[in-house]
Image 1 (cartoon, rainbow, N blue to C red):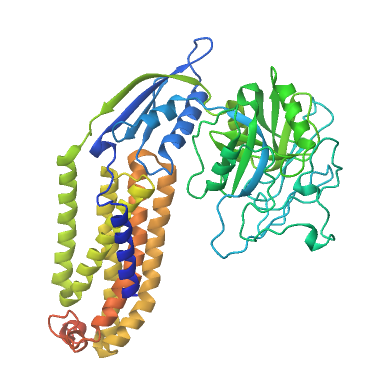
Image 2 (tube, rainbow, N blue to C red):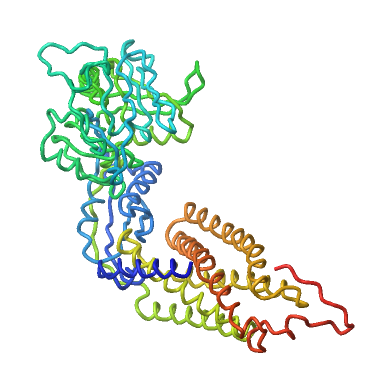
Length: 578
């Protein structure tokens, strides 16, 4: 374990060296940044509604904050929205938050897995849902989710309905399933129109199993977009916040990153949606989302659904792209006319209302103009950072002094364990700043300082268990170390689990500095587990082989006098449970 931990530390140090990342990135309060004020613009000049402002704040926060640990702040100030981003000269962020993205409806041209399979791993194609009107649309993947179906609402056209595969379980990389529909005159057959599996193997070329593009029809796809599509890795970048050009084809990822798509030019935009509401089907009691279009929307929607219906899989799908990400991709089973439709499936009230909000507002529910853009200095600066680090060093020093005085030689384990934990924490903060845009703020520093007590508590639990096992000479040190560890590790894991759950809940329920504190606390809790299991226990077992500890030297902290103290009446003490 000690060698494995050393390898981990060296590996993280190597990554830091290769990326020339030696210091953490700092947040707004320590390094300053850029502040952008957005002023809403309404058609009639009336103040925006509270609902639209709250939704805009949420969307912009997702744009500028990415994974939620970059220390960006988005808040309302009256009817304005103020965005503060760490670092100076954030032109890209200013451009991102100043542009109102729209919802686009695009026909799917191709789809594969969101990330390339590991080298040597054979990809397992999943069947593409059939375009037949009688198909259920459910998939046979390992963990299938019920399909969603989009049907015309009662006030719409009586004909036409769309079947939506669960977006988190698309059929990336699959060879389109054979279709029963005949190939129409003047239209080149797609791969899905090839003979069934009963045909001779030599009749069809076989692509390598590892090739993610196997069976993908690239006809009609812009070569530049196809190149982007092949290079796109949704596990690294989903394209959140990308400003797609509606007049061009586009490569995009699904929300969960499990699939990537080549999408045709935008056929309908979010501005053509009149209403989108969540409701309950009166006959089935299921939650659904109802859509209606306005202006040219009904004709555009009818045209794209007709085109998709007459196409082979996966081009019989129409993707809904919001802020550069595919939020849904229904399979069209019949042309939908009349300007009204509904999406039904395994919705809950929360998911139905969320999708309705996305469809209703497109992206930002309001248009904004940039009121001001300012470079702001840090609110705390180097002096406060130095003060926080000094406070942390004092706290760490007091813990170490107490450990040495109380546990004597055994306190060496506490000292070295805290040193290892500090090294791992520093490396983690630096690497998170390099790869996940993590920025260290005062709230994070507070969380890291508080975690010193959490880490020290794990050592105390283990040490006290060892002492209990050795009292009255019942066990040798080597035996006590192993028996005490069996009992102590459960206590340590339970305590760390409670702390980690609290940190996760606090992180998702809070924003700003409180969320930063929770993130730091959760990170150091995980590091504590790594240190205790991979360093503290193996190092104590190693020390137990040394005569200084095994023979119970007076300065070892495990001497016979301390292990077998009797009460004034001469009665033997009862071992204490740690």
